[in-house]
Image 1 (cartoon, helix red, strand yellow):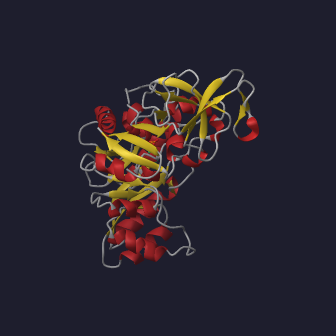
Image 2 (image 1 turned 60 degrees about the vertical axis):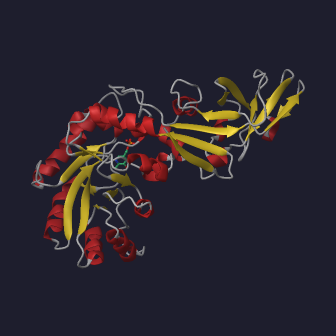
Image 3 (image 1 turned 90 degrees about the vertical axis):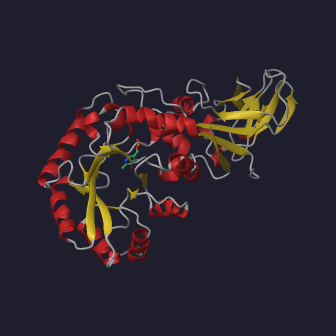
Length: 377
Ligand SMILES: *Cc1c(COP(=O)(O)O)cnc(C)c1O
């Protein structure tokens, strides 16, 4: 046990079940490359990797540091770095970074000729393995579809760079109307044809994020890259299919302090809540510094022994006040469930998202470093 108060219990069986549900939607032989970027969406990279190791074909991360963290964890299987490793100019110390990534066998994403030149240089007499990311309509990262052919040909001409894959990313796959996602896939298909890339020729084609995996079989190609669904959350309420994903995290902390309050007592920064009746409050050592949003001030719900208790006053950096007046057996040291793994609970990630008008991954990626992640069955 660590010396901090908060514990996130990460359920291995929930993650395995989610992986199974996702696999059910995908043809056999299609590879799995889950996204474990941003500390495995806040669930703990080390912990999630310990569950996924040996179960999947590849892991996707966003930054060079994340890729190297996987290698530091002795994850020896393929790692795909989703962001291009370096900018299109010399402002960063790219050669050293690239050399380290290549030395440790990280598969790089390329989106421009300039990046390709930098990779060729850094690879020396090693062979660099790269995927080309194509922008098929999201207008974020990726080589513009019109320039993809020239980039692919330059890679084929490079002696020490191997074109291992080509992919795109969908902007609207989680919407009920799949028109835009299908247009992106049509554009991606056109790029594949132009580049003479076909099934079975050893170049891994991929496009599907979670909503692609779940709702768009035509986006599966040779590999899929689910993120949020693997952790047990639904991408949106508009999805056509709703497999029974299991939230994999339960976040708990102890009831630290309790006290009686008289009618008229006010609490928290700004004294924004006034108790109309006598009652009992408790303090939970979680706050916005841990990723428990300040927007839940006077709105959030936690649970003690399965019973709901409201947040009173403002959430502060390290502490949140709850009203335990209706919990007669509440005692200092009792476990408070800050985030529930029961999707239907008001304090589930989905429940918090409804209050906060945001998406699950924003809630989970903000969970901070003071939370100890523990893998449970
Ligand atoms: C984050 C990410 C994913 C995973 O997306 P989810 O919606 O969480 O499934 C897949 N592909 C790319 C390129 C990403 O950046």
